[in-house]
Image 1 (spheres, rainbow, N blue to C red):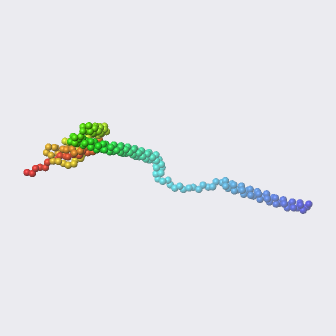
Image 2: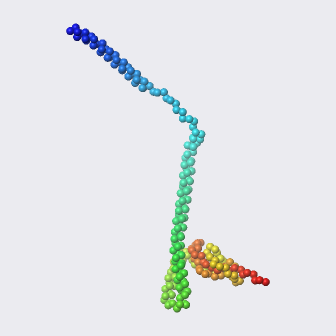
Image 3: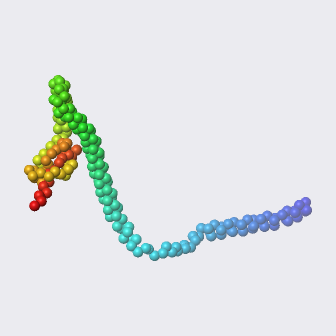
Length: 207
């Protein structure tokens, strides 16, 4: 019995030592938590001096954007007008190609009509060809096409093509004395220039 009491007396200090150790551990944990809770000292960051004119650039940015927008709008309008003009030119060129083919057909019909009397062609055939030729001429007229027969007129390089010059005492120099092939125009554009012979002043006779 006495031995058990002695053992119990020896165990009591061990329990006290454990409690002391636990208290020390708790105190150390509290110190670590407090140290973590203390904010670290802020370290100043050197961003350097502001670039000169940076504030002015930011302030002027809306005006710069407006100027760019106006330039882009102007370029777009120019592109639209150019595309519309090119589209109209392409359509006009396509129409004129068709009209030139019709003019060539009309030339052949007129040549046939001119040769018909000499060949003794039946009148019925001549009347049919004349009707077709008149229909073609009427269609061209509705499209604004007019024939050019400039005999006696002043030579115009826009609508006339001079094949040669001929000395003439009767015709005024620079005027058309003969039409080899009549031309056609549509508005202020020549579909086919009239091929002509132009008069020139006669050379002075030798004395």
